[in-house]
Image 1 (tube, helix red, strand yellow):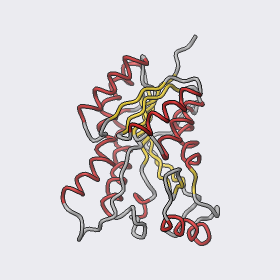
Image 2 (spheres, helix red, strand yellow; image 1 turned 45 degrees about the vertical axis):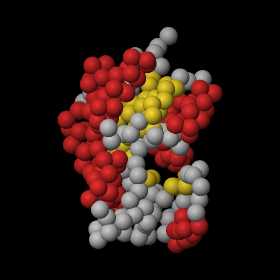
Image 3 (cartoon, one colour; image 1 turned 90 degrees about the horizontal axis):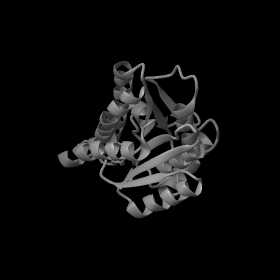
Length: 251
């Protein structure tokens, strides 16, 4: 019997991370979740196990370099290999350049960008030793647009998410051909998180006036792209970013 494929999903407790973890589990992956939201993460673990897959939970700050290395070691020890890494952990930052404090900027970069470095650095040796692997990182449409009109995507967030695209292109060259690495740029995505009237009103306005497909994105829209990047065979795609936004032409 062939060994099951395995994946690490950062920020996997809820939202896009949860949806992607469940979609990967349905494709036969055992999943290691990394998040600070312990209760939500345990709930997602139960959903993965209900699909007949193994699941591990690691309560951790993804900006912690040493913790990332330790988690990768524990996942390898438990599962035997690491086939796929999804860098999904992120945090919004609505403050502009004249409002933001240095520590707030640093924290935005640490959670959204440095976390990707931490986990890629941790899993790359494992993937190289086993003959290959795949990595996908969740960037944002704001990396391309600057996100000037969205409350969650002012300059620090957009800067960090744009850094993911540069990292992806550079590491595709450095880690290829053994490791395939790509990025995903979601537009406005509706999750199971509590909705406020600002998001609801903005989503409705965009759907009416600025999204070609006439609706706000769903978690499954992103998850399907993640599954494609994790499983497609053959795969002649690396160093790329994929926009999942229904063609959001008014941002």
